[in-house]
Image (cartoon, rainbow, N blue to C red; front, side):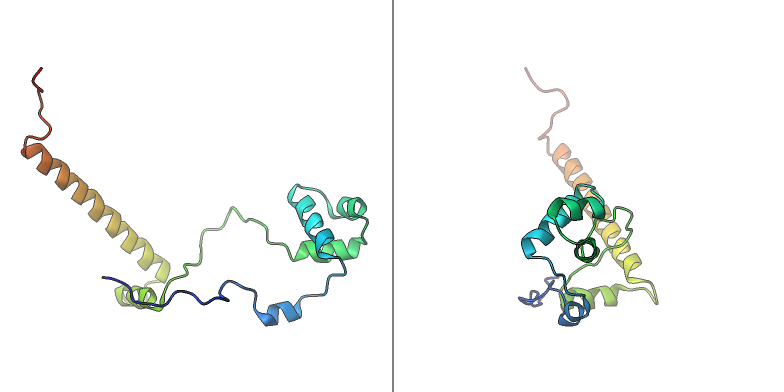
Length: 137
């Protein structure tokens, strides 16, 4: 089944205007802000960063609070799909099954189907004599 949907719009993935409006203003130039974030990713403490870039600690903390940091312990993710793919997922749901279970089940079925098809093709090639047991020398 081919999905017929539209790709995400040009502004997808951007921060919402409401989120931007709610965030406190940072009184650091972008270059200093980026340097503070770079140092934080290297593991430096906020006080040391403020001293290194010559900025007030409060402003450095505001810049660091708004950083995205990796969370290696996450067990879930967001799947950005077309409306057609979402409709298919909803159609494949069993009762009130959570969408993550539906997705896991469908992926499991797909992988099992691929493995069975590969095994069938290997058996088929073996029957045709393409892979002889005792090759002639």
